[in-house]
Length: 202
Image 1 (cartoon, rainbow, N blue to C red):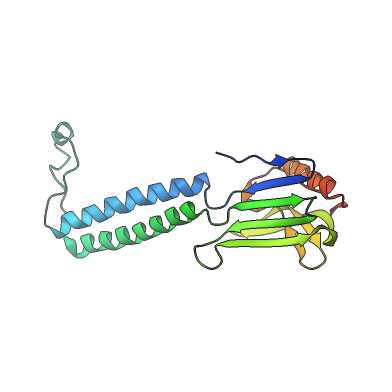
Image 2 (tube, rainbow, N blue to C red; image 1 turned 135 degrees about the horizontal axis):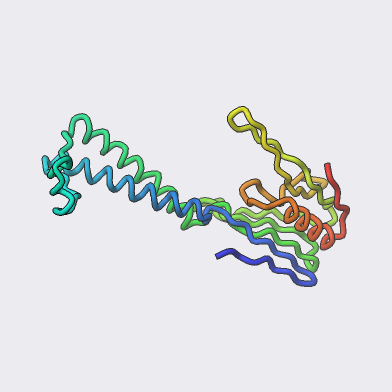
């Protein structure tokens, strides 16, 4: 479920979606199913058992064999390798989804007179990543163009930046946010009005 932006008189909070994206759920589930299938075929092959997966009605057709047998060397061993590899990848994806790596909040607080960027990291010493910036250090909100090259083609994306004295330009939006240009402009304008700083293009 998509989190909503909190808008109060002295507080503005933008939720940031990290690893808990629909695409990550999809690929974690698909890779898990595929790797379990490959690994189960490898186990059947190692035990010398027939890998039966067709119903009796389908097996009645003359061009479909009654069973499928894979020798462990090399087919079974190869499937075992890819199955185990897929399980590791799926386990990694489910872990980062559980930990919500990269998720967090952008908090603009007029009462505390600071901007706080909070992100979840991997378990350990840096599990909570926090960056606090005093509002007096914020100079402007800008919309810049980011270029990404992919297969000899260059794509351009609008990114909202917050210009600060100490940290330079801090991005407030990401390419993977899938925001259309009007949404990007609305967010930049809203943050600019809230912080009472200039809104610029560059």
